[in-house]
Amino acid sequence: MGTSTDFTVAIAGAGLSGLCLAQYLTRAGIDVHVYERDPDPSVRRQGYRIILDRYGLEALRESLPGTLHQLALATGEEPGGHLRFTDSRLRNAFTVTFKDEPYATRQVDRLTLRSILMSGLDRRIHYGKAAVAVDSGGPAGLRLRFADGEAVPATVVVGADGVGSALRAQLMPDAGPANTPMAGVYGRSPLRPGGESIIPDALRTSAVLAIADRPGRAFFFTSMRFGENPREAFARLAPDSHAPTADDYVMWGLLLRQDDVPTGVRGDLPALRDLAARMSTDFHPLVRRLVDTADVDATVLNLFATGRRPHRWAVPRATMMGDAVHVMPPFGAHGGNTALRDAALLGRRLVEARTGGTPVEEAIAGYQDEMVPYAFRAVDTAAGLMRRLTGGAAVPHWVLTRVLPRLHRVTVPEA
Ligand SMILES: Cc1cc2nc3c(=O)[nH]c(=O)nc-3n(C[C@H](O)[C@H](O)[C@H](O)COP(=O)(O)OP(=O)(O)OC[C@H]3O[C@@H](n4cnc5c(N)ncnc54)[C@H](O)[C@@H]3O)c2cc1C
Image (tube, rainbow, N blue to C red; front, top):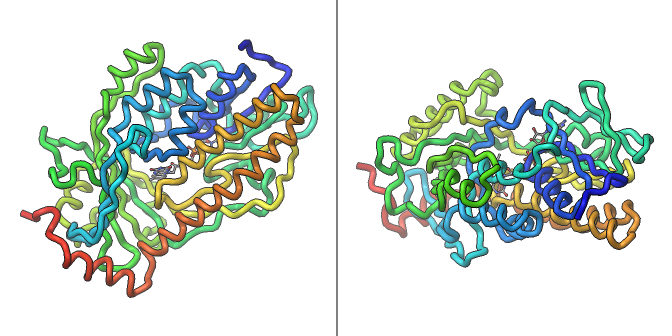
């Protein structure tokens, strides 16, 4: 289908949801442009892995051309595996086992996924464009304005500019996110630092959440093993796209209270890594090894927040997706999946409006009415999990860290 320019969509933010929507609309022949605040694609280290659930996988299947969808599956891990809840010495409390059906939950590398989502969009992504506001008027009905003083006309504007959204206050007044008491210091460490896996065989296919004796403190880790090496998979399926360099790695996160993160270390990566090292001294030696071998530049601090339900969408033909609307604490792996689900749903509604003649305002309202209930169910689930796993409630904490581990064998010998 050729691209028609009498209907043009401007997306603020080239993150997971913005790029996924751009892929969807490009496939349907709709004129779409993505405006990203970063000066170029390599600036943000979007490291780490992401667990895709059936909503995220289905959104990618629906939005991406077939070969790019295959590329996402080929470079991801095999489906299946476990999530173990343990005490700080890695003694099992209980284990959740994931299905290993072809379309069940699976891990993919974020950087690789982002390269896949950018494939074929080169001339449609514009870097160094920080969106600041949406104005009514102009030839297309709306204008998206940028911090550099420029503006572009658009029939539809989509705010996909993440948790710190610059457009949210205007488009969704009174629905800014609420802070939580919890934070995470995240890192990435090589899986085979001296040639040998740092993760013992017993945990090969497991993600682990180790809950400390002290309420409000926990340590998460999981290894990311590429199904097919991204360089080879890109050469086979998308030779014209940029293939990220990638070795298997372990992603970890120290969960702690925001009060435990001194303001002075918040933008200082070596200091954040040192903080993680100091705060994990009571954990199993494997945890300490992971922090000690981490790539300092990949350290990230995330202050957990929860989105608030929007009650009013203030600018007709402008809407929002992803963390900009419904940020959630990273418990249960719903944030990115919900963002991708939004993108596919909004894409479907906009394409239906173009092909079926539904007024675009109606299509956008339909998207918002469907998105808010599922997205805020996910926010509530993630916030509830965070409270149960890291909160101060004495009985669940005692059961998790004292009673259940006594019923199981030691998972990882300490010697
Ligand atoms: C440690 C961690 C682990 C996670 N693990 C998982 C997981 O396993 N599964 C899962 O589903 N989710 C996970 N998430 C959540 C997931 O990463 C987010 O929910 C997801 O990235 C949200 O996508 P988005 O498109 O809304 O925003 P983002 O991907 O954050 O993209 C926003 C983009 O907008 C750009 N931008 C910002 N401001 C502007 C502006 N003014 N103008 C233009 N551009 C702008 C940013 O530079 C960025 O590129 C995790 C989050 C964290 C922190």
